[in-house]
Image (cartoon, rainbow, N blue to C red; front, side, top):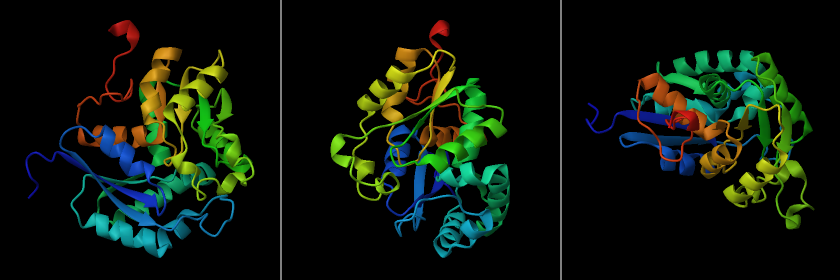
Length: 266
């Protein structure tokens, strides 16, 4: 039997060297919402550039299967695959195939992907042409895949901006930045500065995908500066859990998506 004070439990499948997902989700989680992680080996751990994984292959990876099985035995509210790039490359077919099969492995626990959470969050906030802000370790194939994923859902990006690390990282190949430590070097204040400088007039929101890209602390400052909704991957994953469980708790710093009213309504 669940303790009365624990109202929702989110399980997350996270690559082995991503420190950001749990840190941001715990920082955002309302009282009574808990977060529980299982890890799987990153597809880039061999140094290769990521260009997608069929959902069957993702599901059959021993770490993923073990994580789903173990999280499924914890009586959680839902499980999220916090690896949006797999959705970007695989499209709706990946999302649908993986979640349906993963739900069976997890013993019937609801499973969703970061991609599905992002699309739901954009719909919830009414964003149709977001500025797409990508992490410094994303490469050209992922740019194309992310744009295509959004366009397929009828929410094509107004433009794309890539966050830039300091010059000391310039000699490292882009797709290796995350594994070489770049994940620790993202500063929310610099996210705000770079995004605000490049925000196009025809964008109606900001989307910051990348579960390992620290950006939650930039949400409300960006909304204040730009006057549009801001959606991040981890923020969307938590929103999806709250939506599934019917929880209406607001999240300080969570922006319009997580309970902040638009400025005109304040």
